[in-house]
Image (cartoon, rainbow, N blue to C red; front, side, top):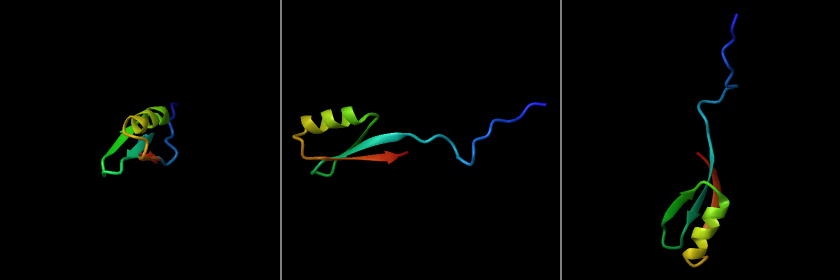
Length: 54
């Protein structure tokens, strides 16, 4: 008898991405905090970075 794998109530996979929001309203998502920080620094360092689940 084989058992189906349990997804434990989750519908699909989610991932954490880092969203950079620049002062001019532009938003971009990055897979790592390091990449978001680097992009923020290139843009002048005035943006905000938030981790979000997608």
